[in-house]
Amino acid sequence: MEMNSSFWSQIKSSMKNKNGTNKLLENWLDPIDLIKAEKSGDNLKVILGVPNQFFFFYVNEHLKDKITQELALVSGLKLDVEFVVTGKMASDYNTSLQDVMQNTEQIFQNNSRPTPLYPPKPIENINEDFTFSTFVVGKNSEFAHAATYNVSQNPGADDYNPLFIYGPSGMGKTHLLNAAANQIKQNYPHLRITYISAERFLNECVSAIRRHEMDKFRQKYRENSDIIVVDDVQYIGRGEAVQEEFFHTINTFIEKTRQVILASDRMPKDILGLEDRSRTRLERGLIADITMPDLETRIAILRYKAENFNIRVSEDTVQYIAKISKKSIRELEGNLKKIKMYSELQGLTINLELARKVLAHHENTITITVEEIQRIVSEYFKIRVSDLKAASRAKPIVVPRQIAMYLIKKFLDKSLVDIGKAFGGKDHTTVISSIEKVENLQNKDAQFKNDIDELINQIHNVTGL
Image (cartoon, rainbow, N blue to C red; front, side):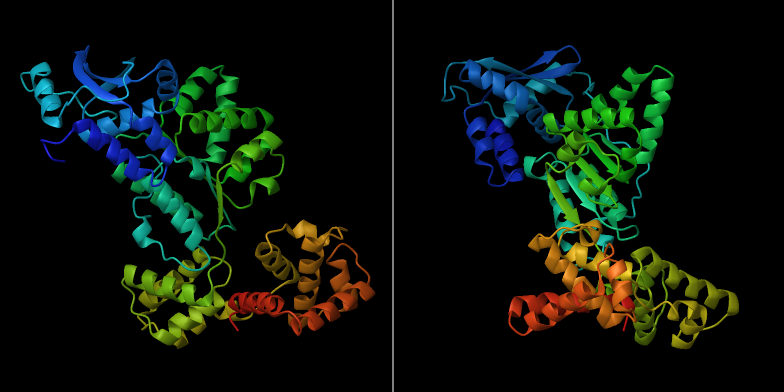
């Protein structure tokens, strides 16, 4: 920052840059003037001028926290912000950064400079090795990765608050949550970050209710934190009282433009026992899914993990491990560690022969089940597995159901009766009709055929064949 340029103009420019094309923010920021900085107790009070009472009300409610955070980030000082009505749209002041800093030096003499606002401290429960640079991005996770990274660059942005990431266990959701927390800590060291599992939130809430310490609990989560990151949100549906507290906590953060980042193994609408208002609140922001990576991405992850573990693995061995590790990224890493441990214990070189020996039991599991095909189809069409089994005749449900029946018949040795039972007891004539419709439509509709080909490719990625 140039010492001879306008301090406040640079603060406003910085806030605008962080909020991209947010014209609403620009319209509210431009008329605000920096009047002066003066000592107020142990803090530095920054007085800002607004043109009228309407501006005064809005910026106090919606912008004060953001402006305070930005000023603290730039100056490194503990400060308060106060607004006064000036009645002027144009600035009569030309307060530069140099003026402010000279004033600060006079206020805090004898080297007794104030400590930074909310001094950085380690974030509890965070794995500092989980960063965006250590996350291997694939088609399965590129949207979730991009959304999480954008949040870490500009926490509190309305379009991304709350950010809700969902997907099966072991796919990398926790890695992204940790990466976001680590990045926010680096970008905004003055912000206080709380990282917690929903189960721990639940247990602490129940304990606080029993001990009559809810005020203390609320202060911990609502007042003493600027960013809240919650993993395994599906557990919140277990208790009515906990849901009430969780709802108000999330609501408080969003109303104060404080960032909320959540992860679950299912979408909000599929969390058992979740109240409608909590579900609506969780769906208010941005929802991003993360699924099992395809074979190409699994190979890339294995290469990265092998290098990180300092393991030399041949290409054919990498291909083999990636093909049979089809359940989760966690399984992928676990299989690599098994081979490494076995090679060290036996003093053997890691090669394809050793990998086949150590992971022999996995070769017999390179298959797919009815349930997995139903899951793949439901995720592809953004519906629930239960919808496939229901009696609904709506086209958005019927077509995916017919496709699922077709794929099960194609890949599994199942009778028409067994397939019908897997879809809520449909009779065999319905199954025959569904399969025939899918076969015929592929020859007439190019987009439909593309959908089938993509689903078949996903199944191949699961089976490794």
